[in-house]
Amino acid sequence: MKYVALLVLLGTLLAVGYMMFVPGHDDSPGTKAPRDEPRADLEAAGQRERRPPPRSEPDVTAPPAPEVPAFTEERGPEDTTLGGTVLSPAGNPVREALVTLCKSSGGDSLLGGDLVRVKEPVLTHTDGTFEIAGISGGKGYAVRVEHGAYAPALQRDIVIEKHRANKIADICLSSGVEIRGAVMRKSGAAVAGARVAVFSLVEPSSEPVRQVLTGEDGLYRVEGLTPGVYDLAVSAEGLESLRSGPVHVLAAPATSKRDFLLGEAHSIKGRVVTPGGEPVAGAVLRAELQRGKHPSSGRAASGADGTFEIDGLSEGTYRVQVSRKGYAPDSRLGVATGGAPLRLCLIPTAGATGFVVSSADNQPVKSFGLMLWQLDQKDRRSLLLGDMRMFSSEDGSFTIEDLAPGKYQLQAYAKSLAPAFSRPFAVRDVYVHGVRIRLDPGASIKGTVVDSASQPYAGATVRLLDNAVRDVPVANIIYDKYTRLGKTQTDEQGAFVFDSLAPGTYQVQVSAADKLTQSQRDVEVKPRSETLCGPFVLTEGGHLTGTVLDARQVPSKGAKVSLLSDEEGLLREVRTNEAGEFTMRNLAPGSYKLAALPGLSAENPGNVFIAAVASMKAALQVTVIEGQTVPVTIYLQS
Image 1 (tube, rainbow, N blue to C red):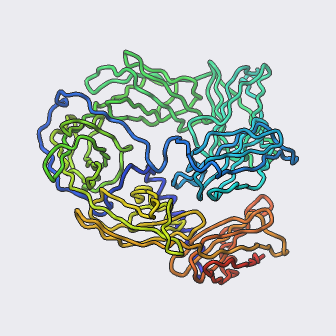
Image 2 (image 1 turned 120 degrees about the horizontal axis):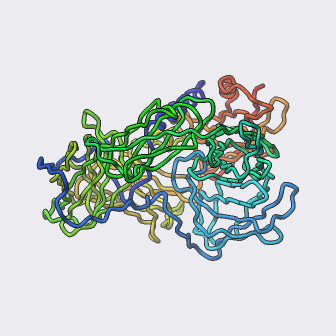
Image 3 (image 1 turned 30 degrees about the vertical axis):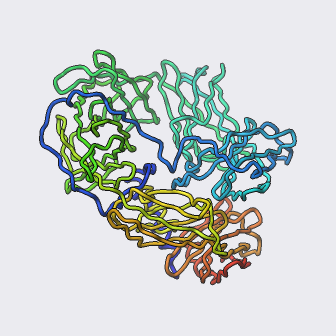
């Protein structure tokens, strides 16, 4: 364990690199077959035509994933409330601040994108207080506070106890940071009315966090931003559109100045056609700068005759991408502004049709969902294409459109039936017909959850996981959301059930507010069977609380405290508060190591490698005891 921290750091970097090449996806409804035990017992006929057979269009929609739902107001006991106070940087109450209660969606985002709103926002009173009632209670809550005069604030990891008036620490808003500057022509004249849009690079989004217009003097000012990294996009009619690139404003109060010199607009012109030379109208074109003096981008749409013009560009060479529904996307590199008209060719896509039937009686399944996988050259599933598509038809038929040439496989889901895969099928320039998917009756997993007094525990969260998942920080990055196969809660008798399962090996995980999470691995499920697991006994576990001091015996703010074990490696990480204090709750009894790294700042840039080695040398051996809180003090090495 001497170099565990170094190995964890290396594992995290490799995992992040892996995730850059494998896109994350939302959880799909229901449960799924384990990825290493696919079903391939279906037939794909070879009949091919240029268009699908005439019949009514199926209802094809992409439902919201259950783990990341659209806003549905949480309804809990009215005597379960959460209150607090919002203060200004000077410590005065802030009235009419917007307070939103959120909860973790189960996502893996490290940037706050895993939160979803669970209650309608409320406004603070004259004394800066607020109260939110009717909350279900549990772990994973967060409160977001917004006010036009201050930077937004977010308080996370809130535990709400049922039937209590819960209170959180005061939320102190910061005055935020600002970005200001001037937009001028290269001749030196001010550009009035230029649009300055500010995009966050910490929480990326297609929508700007703020946008303003320059005044008559060409000046702009964007206030009340959260400290972070931003990208500014500036545009004005008849002039080139520029982007600033990363603008770092990392401390409040602080001001960053960024000026722009706009030259005359340049453009890229061309035409979009089919392989036969027919014009393609309504194609979307995007240009991204490859080489040039100033970051720039633009977009346009092709007209009825297929022609387009992407204007507002700075001088340089670009990558031009074109896409349209019903066609395979295309792109071109090294396209220079002001050059000869560009000719882009879009190849029409094809698709697949077929049926889903029940293997028990060979009758059509009238309502089902399909997931589309792209296969590699060895017929291995390499990429999931989009969300689950829902179908409803009397004869169990489906039509999948807009497939580019390649090899694919479909995975079908239906209520009370086990998921199954089709056989691989190849799409070229025509439709593939006769893809049949047979669904067997599903198996189930049942179990119970009790407390330490052996009484039924209602409302516990139960997750069905891929058997390979480990509940540790690095594993949470490596394993994507498709290893999380289902989620439910225990009833009043503490019982739970997962049905419609394919045969395989699963893992069941049980958690509840302020309780130690319990897991059972290697749960074997056989065809058309009922598998019992548990009972799961939820206990409080043990707790650690302590202080991190630097070499001068001063509390270390923002220090990262890591809990490690010889068997699992890194188990949990927290950061110290303003007083250098930290708490870790609901830990399994046993022996662990505690290591701390100082918080990095402008005053303490540090060296991650050296700090990690020093941290492990100073690691403490601690023993966690059920139902007890163990105090510790960690001394950082100089």
